[in-house]
Image (tube, rainbow, N blue to C red; front, side, top):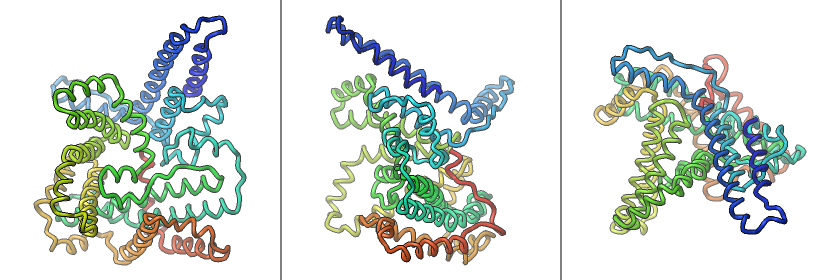
Length: 474
């Protein structure tokens, strides 16, 4: 309701800023300036209210525990109650959509929606409410409100995308869950670093298959109704740099943070003033690095806290902030090393180095993301560095009850299939678009084959514990 009233309020302010015919033209600028100031204040109030709701509902326990820790360390003898609230499903997703809607109205990118129910439909569109993608009003509104009929083409294409999502989620992600939990949720001092690193690797695979699989289901459901939802993944493991990885992974979150956090920080008067001062004192390049680093710090702090109320998520954000900032600082050095080694003349070697580098960065990043306790995380990193012991790898896995050669075989084959599809898409060939053009009998034969694979090899039923959707917790 508040978001709806904001749109109406902006429309009212804009109408007041239009001068009457008998008013002098010199008043036009003054009226527009006053209207802009009113809109800015109105925007700050609405965004503050949305963020307040998000913080109170989602972050109250985290804030209470940390305040209690500080109070206890100061020996005040005061007991801070741990406040817990029922967190609405998908609050992190539709809070960002509400903010982007208000900001876009303020910027004049979109016109406010006059129909309250239509606005509710945008904010609470059921396929995207739990795991995204994070949609923008001007991207989804035309198809969302068009009322396009379901066609055989949309039904077929949407079902294929849904089945592909279930294949990744149930056959791969859910099957890996027991093994991931057995390695990363126990006393890590019992495992060598090689086993922990393997656990981080398979968790990275699990997270990608779980998250992208559910997003495939969301997009497929939307496709059935001819509603265009943005993609959220673009073959992230083919990225050559950290920056490129985040342009391919959770793309809608990255784009949102860029447009509504990074650019506003960079264009703020404080940063502009700092840019002028640092440019005079340190030069253009150093000034650019300093101001970018400040904006990136805010972006990655927001990224970490958006994912969850825990210090591991903050550390996760700071991990990528550090890597991207170091890449900015040492970019000339890296270019020089590449030129000296003539790596451009050896594309295979260069690609191999980039792949190994990004694999290590991503795996360690997801390990930080997964482990809630900082103490456990430190212990695990120590084991990886000082107790790697590759010779203990097989024995370590044999000690894990969840290890089953059939599970590994099923997952390995399924991962190869997903990797092959991603590779084809990276080469510019979209298998899904090709399948749509097949004859009906061939298209549905493939569909039923995948359904059969999911039914036979899916990790569900007796012997499998229900597995929550990972990103539904955010």
